[in-house]
View: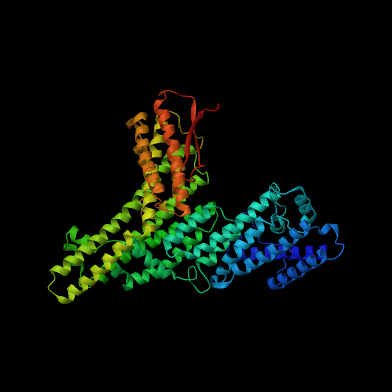
Length: 601
């Protein structure tokens, strides 16, 4: 009986490994991390049907029950041991069922996944737990007796690892239990992404989801979510619909969205938008690298958008000719001409660039003497995004006023009717924009990010002024070469313009400032962030887990650095022998700075 149970359980492990390998290969993520798709000729039970395997697991379960309830049972089949074996068998059946459901076409199995996950997690954390800190001695002894034919926590790694495998610390049962639970919890979070209804909503949800470092199998399952077999995003929306809604949310006038020019450009945007979302399914290092790879494509899209905006002007105004256009005053031009498509593309480029820059902090790519220049650049990007979004809303308001004035002043009934229809559409669009919680949250967080970047920039310049933060002397290279390397990918786009190292040197010229003044100004920016974040948390303005986690992290950063500034203002200006350290325990992109005794060189 033990041999039969072991055989079927091992077969279920192999089938799970085959299913995971197939998921990763179909997602085209096989090259990532240490996951090697080759199985070196080993059989992974690929010819065994999951349903047949489920029947075998059910059969051996009945065998164990029958043997345990027989007269004069074997001592090895004590109550605790039998309970554990049955729980492990049930867990394998449930997990194989989960893999079957989560890989069904067009996300048809997602509702079933939501039904299975609570049961599987309860089983894994309870009867089938690999490790429990509160286990009695009897339970631990039972676990030892059945461990040989239950689960090997590293079976997938052993089967699929490189040859020879990299020397890593072996996983113990506690770590295996934790990883298994995290894997299932991340599967649940991944499935919740199908509830998103907008392009920006899915983009932000992906950012948060991947920030929790889900495993490669879970991230591979995101690919069919982004583009299902029926050619829909999340199994519900076409990319053309999503992009059109995103343009409307950005502020592009609704009448312009129905033009032939706009529809054609939206179709051309499908591939770059999909590639952008796909980039976010990689691990953190691969996300940063692939953002740099797709920015040139977005630079081409940006140039095309500018051309399409000009065509759109003439399509929306067929009676307008170039001579008439050249005679218009700037104020008249602003009422009818605005680079809406170009602005939308540029805002998405800025989102990608900001994420790319912040990932440099998270991946610890920047040295501490580079932090000030990177915060300077981040502040610039955030201000550009905020200004472009505000400008678009302002243009929409002007367009509405123009339509209302035309309706009042025109003598033609046909013109009045068209102006009235356009005015109604624009008014509803403005109301929708101002009431959109996603846009409001993004604008709020962008402003907080800019203020905090400005404050940390001044803080670091003050430490440079006091001689605490000093650039090292390179034998090869220089701070300028490092900076140019960091922003090399940003040169692939025309907007926002690439900032130069000379501009940074001009802004941070130490001869212009006093350290105490800089510390005071830095604290002023941090106080603004603290006041806003505290009000948002207290008022429960944003209640989703991602926003609350982000705001609390910002608050910790602000409070910690404000305390440092207060101490430094009270310290003697010439207090030397100290070095500046940065840690990212509170927030992945904004550090807590600390002073410590300088290490002897």
